[in-house]
Image (cartoon, rainbow, N blue to C red; front, top):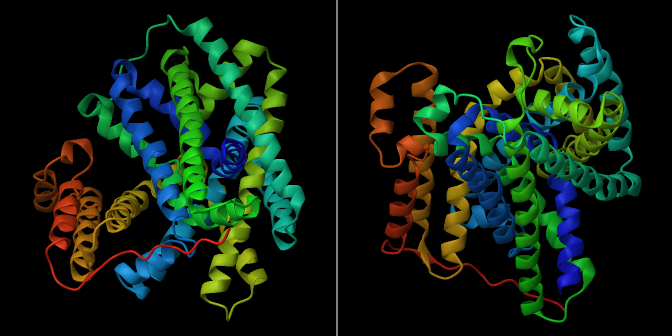
Length: 443
């Protein structure tokens, strides 16, 4: 059981490990300054805890979240939510971000100043052309590269973190930014959204079920126990990685004043620390490793997003979807890493509360019958609060912002949490209750 859990955990680690897992922890470490503790606590809770819980809950239904959401909320909502989710982990955010992260961490530090734009265009042109060719003909080569190379890269990051802690651990952190001074936990929690792992867990849970079934289990109890082993192992692995990278960013003496215009802080910490600890030649090695690691994620996301859209809207062929998503990813990648992160944040702050609430509903419904109108109302209220929070902030609508900020836990960036809990409690009392169906297990 432990062996099966370890094998599956290693595979899922390779699937999850991508651009956001590299760049956001060191950025958080630097920007949180003396408020590092609560900031990394919030980050690990949203970036690891919620993501792994989402994955575990998803693997308990072989039909995936689309089946759960369709039965509990509505089929149209399941499709609309999953379309938004796949576009986020696909062509709009995650796919272009993998390319720009590979460029920012691996290639850009070796380029002369002022040549960023033309080199980014050339790099992404080749990068996406190759990813597109693989996406048209998915093979085991991609899976094997991702499965073996990503854990090796993660191990090298651990070595970097350990050596960095030894060399720079005593250095004083920089001053915390205004965001982390106001609410370190809340800022860290929101930063954890940027990893996209909780959203990816919704999509990857079906893949996890397929992988687990290939290993073979004696009974349902062994299957469920293995799922929890997988979750614990992946959670521990990512927590160690995140805390280590964030600690490195918190203590590494990065000179922000001399960073090139538009440079990403997290990518700069990673590349500068690598060169400082291992020497200038290490940058070439880092460039190869991070590019190949991000590349496998890019190709895999083009495939999974294209397959989802083809299965959901079959009138358009998989090849057309793959072509469209590759071109969109290429175009957005050339906006630059910081621009991608900036425009993705509002969308993630809408999708994440909905995702977390869905997981809460599914989890409670495993044990207790819940009212369908109650579950629908809960999702509606959470969605409304998420939209109100973003629209109020984006358009400076003071009245709406005051209403959202008056909700409990708003200062911790969780104004939707208590309404979600109240909605679930109401669902225990309202009529038209339903309980989750236990999945059938075949040994």
